[in-house]
Image (tube, rainbow, N blue to C red; front, side, top):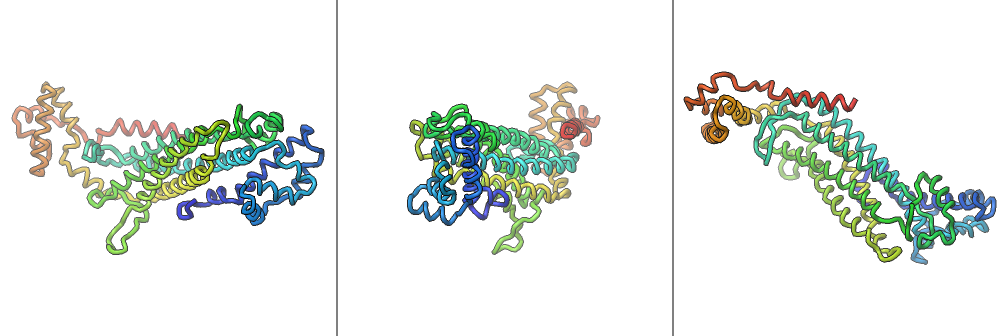
Length: 426
């Protein structure tokens, strides 16, 4: 994990000590279940639990000698547990413990991610309500299109975050799986009953079938759900960056960053950082997909990859969500610049209304379209309103004598849509 881009409590969840704590939970749950089914002597679980604790330094020392992290962990537990220690890890393979513990960590990490995502959802809805009637020029291809509202942008992002939440919830369900079926998944020295009961106590479902490991399509789905959520955040951040440009200046981050050389600068650094980190999340999906296909019952090629991409993906998405929530909550809206930019086109942003009105008043669509297009070029060149240029054509002027549109009424349907979305969230 990069310390710079990790926040509590996600940072602590992926610490080495927390990993050992999850390994210990799996080992204890297994011993407890085995004792219940008479596979180890009565009293073993109590004796083991009372005697053992996590000694990070000792585990590290043993691992340095034997070059196997899980085996070093077990040997340290055996040292502490004395005679009862011989029943620790009975019938299990390393991946039983590691994969089941990793599922627990990913499940808990997804809960943190979901909590952060739901907070962002709430903030987006608040802003959507606040700005649902603030008219802003819409842009397609970066060019002025028709009017919209700033609120609609927030509603759009809110709806996408709701879909992200659904994906993340499915990801949490798909990874809440344990596996305690031995070296190649055949239950050769551990029973399915033990697996079922131990998983139940760890709040996991037992895998329906496994090899030496849990199958990595599950992990890939989780990383993909995280990356999609990160891409939603990038989408929001990119729009904020565009609307913050000096020539636009419609919105601004709550705490833009300056320049070491140019004191006047107000840079959208947080948005840029979110866009950059989203690229890492998408890159991690490729690695997660390549971890799915392994040799036979398993090989180790996925392990080193996961030590990087899983903690990093969770840490980054949590960081991005927290930063985006603060950014949206404190977003500075420059209403005067929004109004100024809406007027820049001199009415050209209502060209479709003019087109439809002319058609309904008897002009062929092709003629009307060409006339408005030509008039738009003239209006832009001469810095005049589109309507005034059109009225220089005597035939069109007669048709346009009656008021052709009401700017306030233009967004009535959009307001109805906004009210419907708000009602659905209550």
